[in-house]
Image: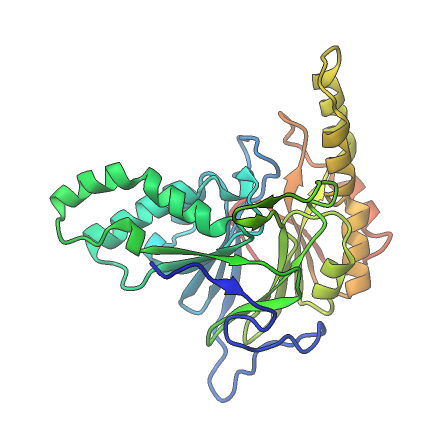
Length: 337
């Protein structure tokens, strides 16, 4: 496995971000490959739901596939989307909340079996995310080591799983271009999802949450991940073709928190502040989309109270329309953008 990588302001390829009004990569004479963004899971929060899987996304450019967040059930959603696990060589994690990363163990385990038993993979999967990503990948691989050894009894020449996965941390607030290949470049900025947290330095670094901008030969796509209102995210999204944004039903979520904590000695204040300041209401989403002048808005990561499945689309759209008049898509699981 490659060693840990500290990503600098100039990124992995030593190329600085020239400005935030970015354009797609030049295509040249070759025909542009088709782009597909698949909403694998559109639920918000670490809450199992009947109708929506945990947050996960798939970006396909031609025959290249990239994962963005790996919520629980991501492997099942990939199968439903008709995608082989072994076709994914790169994954990006926006932040290390469990609803965005709990599916990592199943992905690593099942992908390794695919690679080891069917010889479907020739290079390690590279996994990028905030500080701690290297450790999460390393410890997750350790957690499947006993089961992997049992499988290797049937396939003794199989490469151990610790050779198949490499975690890399983004350590700067950005904007920083941290990944590039011949079809894609990715820029990150730290967002405001952890803004009320007291900064803590861990052995692996400071906890951070990122929004990402994906530039393909044809278009630009910005993924907010989880965030509150953020000028950095607005700048990242400037003139993007598509903004894929979280959204919260703040009244419903806060009301549920107050009901659940009534009559207890639990201090509900930090969680309520988190919901109010570190997530996006429909009006917040519309403001970002409007000021950034994005061409299309796609809603995902619906923050709803536990047990709630219905989305008040009329209300959400009316709030968004206060600031943004472009196309708005209400995402559902396995929807292709």
